[in-house]
Amino acid sequence: MTDLTSHDPEAMKAIVNRLRRAEGQLHALIGTIGSEANCRDVVTQLSAVSKALDRAGFAIISNAMRDCVAGGEHDRMDAQELEKLFLSLA
Image (spheres, one colour):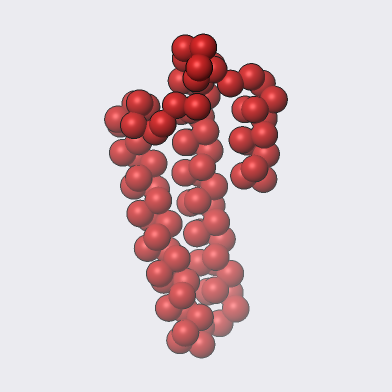
């Protein structure tokens, strides 16, 4: 499988931004738990973190699919491997 450095730089920048956003949301989530926040706030923050990570994961796999499907012989992934990657995020 190709490494992430071979992917589209703009796409990778967007993914890193998503992960940084998730990091901030996770930090906020930890803060809400420590400050005795109400359940609604905790669940809202948890949902935001989860969605941000999922979107980053799907973007990484989407970019990898483009490279792996079109890549050279040693980088090529079959449909079963790609499906396994997607399902690992489910």
